[in-house]
Image 1 (cartoon, rainbow, N blue to C red):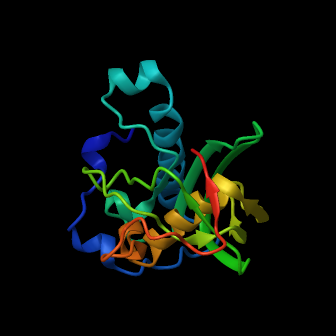
Image 2: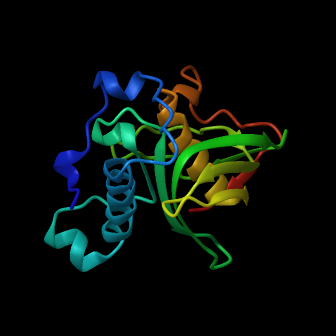
Length: 184
């Protein structure tokens, strides 16, 4: 089981690398890694398990965050309408996105970043993501709101991009024109 000890911190070189594609069909080892990413995110949201194992709660985790430079992400969240998005994906890719922007009102956080970094992170309001599940099924997800933001955050990790790279350094809370404000 993954713990906070397994998650590398901001400044580690793996977080700035472009991760490698996972060969299909995935190896047992790759399946195990991806499965453990999803298990961490689910466990981190369970108060009892999280406190027992000192897990910091998260809604997404990417393989580079555990020092595995491969294109794998896990997301587990419920949106404001109560829809559950629980996915573990190999080689996720954003295949289309809206022109319209969105941002989390409270800003974004990251399991690899220990301190809070205030500021607005502009994201696409809607994205379509393609990827392969643990069972080998190819999925195409049309996402908006918190789910769209979370998937963009995790896919950025696969490209060596951190959420704070998008924050305006001069004016972190500069309004993002025409963007949708999303509450967490």
